[in-house]
Amino acid sequence: MKHPASSEITKENVRQNSVSNSGIHVTPNPNVGMFTIELESDATINKDIFVYDMTGRPVWQKTNTSESSFKIDISDRPRGMYTVKVAINGQVSFNKIVYL
Image (cartoon, rainbow, N blue to C red; front, side, top):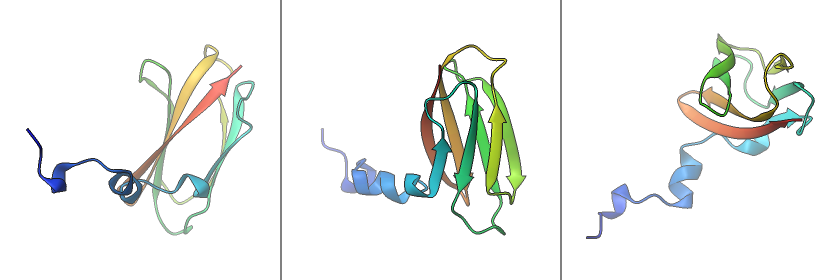
């Protein structure tokens, strides 16, 4: 059964519902437990930033902030893959990072 076009997931739909990754810079990646997130967004817009471990548990967060630069230290956590979630004005972007 084919679903109506309005419910189909396309690259364009996904692009419209996410913050451009080109405006989110996570460096260095891979890292040794310390990294920086730089956002190219209006300083007056509030943002929510989360870092999740591989089980989906939040290990770092900063909510309702107008800051555009974040220095993050997860060196007390196990090495592996982590996900950075950035939410700006209801639009969400996810980035993977590697802690070596």
